[in-house]
Image (cartoon, rainbow, N blue to C red; front, side, top):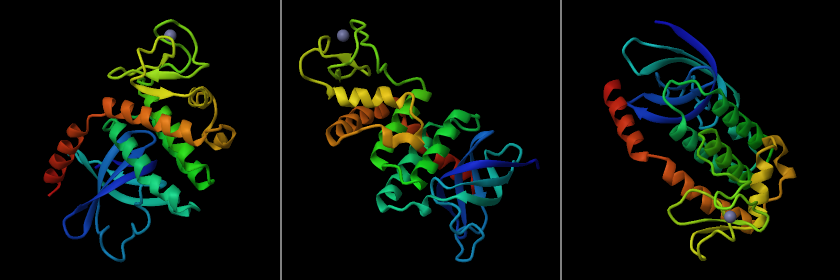
Length: 249
Ligand SMILES: [Zn+2]
């Protein structure tokens, strides 16, 4: 059985039987994995405190032939979201982890996605404004998948978004105010579009240099929720998880 060791982000866990857990984790070098953590549900487990979503650590695991599930050997946390100062930040941790989980392809290395997730862990620990971080994270997650619409150029007329933009119903693009048909769709203020343009070049540990006021934050939340629901297929995932849990028994 080949053993692998890698830096990884814990994404989530499932119960397995009486004493074990299935751990979903994103490795830096070999993509997303699902592994059995033996005894992780016991009170005195070596995994205690190491399997919270968005924990970063060194992970060792065995791969077994013909099996999708690997077997965890150890998880040594190097940074835990539990060290975050605010309870609000902790509330977002599960959301970040779930989005990465939904998007990370199975066993396919995606180092840019790993670096994005890892930088989010650092930003949370450093006390970054978490709602700003969430909108930034959604932007980059969608952009890394190649599905984020242009934040600089209206596809209708080639103009910019200095006056804000609109995402028409059933269309995943930002169009300028002149090209937007009527008042339907999701409107984005000039401030929201400015935040997006800034997000293209600002590192997550410098998020405090990007202004995101309440209204613009709401607009982006709505626009991102639309983009995420269009580009994510949840049914496939839950079906696959159920299959793998049956195989693990
Ligand atoms: Zn236009």
